Image (cartoon, rainbow, N blue to C red; front, side, top):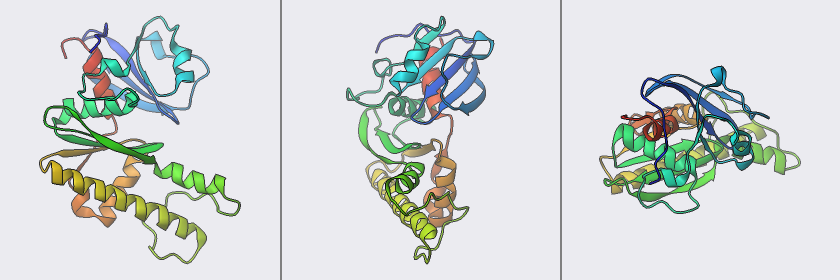
Length: 244
């Protein structure tokens, strides 16, 4: 692991996680998260009070905007002390998993429901077991609307639709939601077969939606899942706050 200069445990600083669709911000005082929020991409670096910034990014063009910012720590994959990572693993996935290890202890599985829906797990020794990547819920709905001539854009329904739908919008919602939830259930059950005591942490932009659907469809599974929207920030914090 390559050491970062980091911040002291009384210093205010900004965590910035650049995702595939949005910027995710957290304002910290030392190890304490004071607030978090999301924004669209920027065209130039803008930080409240010109605070130091810790940045983790999967979007090179957005990363470049920040390279001349005077108080900047950039977290790269080689900074994360997760065992067994592979060279092309996304920094965001590794950080979220490291945050889960630090907060909930291994073994642990992270389900990140963002632009992509990812599963990333570590064993008792904080060794990467592996994972999977598929399009996230929003990406699936968007893909059907933009890659077909006649299918409409569909918003997330408040409740799960009838599985056997009688109109196009409901059929799209049914197809995407039930197959995705079935896939999530399958991965979780397989993980619990491997690591029965493992925590499962759900995070990402669509996580609250998926959590609500799971509570409706699979309440016994839903009650075993921990929802933590700030998981990537916990991973960042553990790497840059001195004496944490």
